[in-house]
Amino acid sequence: MRSPLGLCSLLLTIWLGILSGCGTEPDPVPTRQPPPVQAPGTERRGLTPPLDEDVEPSGVLTTQGSDGAVRLSPLVGTLSHEALDWDDYDLIRGFSTTDQTVRWRAKWIRPGEYHVVVISSATGPTAEARIRVTLKAEEPEREQRVEATLPLTEEPTEVTRTPVGIVKIEQPGEATVTARMIGLPLLGTFGLAGIDLEPVTMPEAGFVAPRSPTDEP
Image 1 (tube, helix red, strand yellow):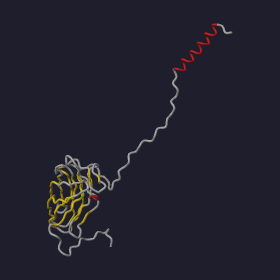
Image 2 (image 1 turned 180 degrees about the vertical axis):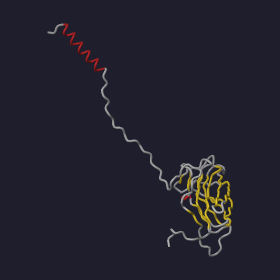
Image 3 (image 1 turned 180 degrees about the horizontal axis):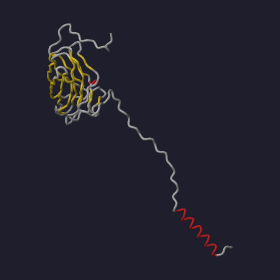
Image 4 (image 1 turned 60 degrees about the horizontal axis):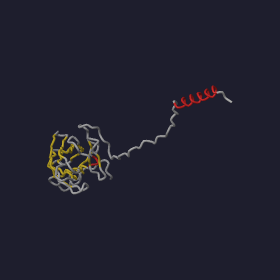
């Protein structure tokens, strides 16, 4: 039979052991973290140039067709800002400021006057989409500007053709065509589907645009 002193010593030892165990936290069990969720990427049909007002047009050169017109497709335009992009219908979307531009390189074989026709979609309660188109010829160096307010369309996917002015090509050569929105719908959407430059006077009979080296024989 234990003496009272030995029993007290045993109880004291057990109590100290309990206190020391309570002061020590067990090592945390490592848990496996799920991999981060990656947002789906957006497929682009062209490279986005740097955010530079003096960005050069793309390397695609659009020349006159057999009808004498220069038809600038949105897919070969150079977009000046990352906010601009092509939608599923190949319209250029994302215009929000007046410093955003789309630029093309064009080549004329036949001098003369040309209607500037903007192909666009603009929805909203009031017509507030106003565009400015600038043509800068290389030889002789000359800059011409035309602008107009674009009409509304009933649907975002519906486009309309709007003549916005006339420019004059003095001699065969290359030029840069720049589109800039100087007014945008406060409510609604806007999309640019291209620009056509059509001759005021139709080409004479027998006019044939020169073939590109990449054309099929």
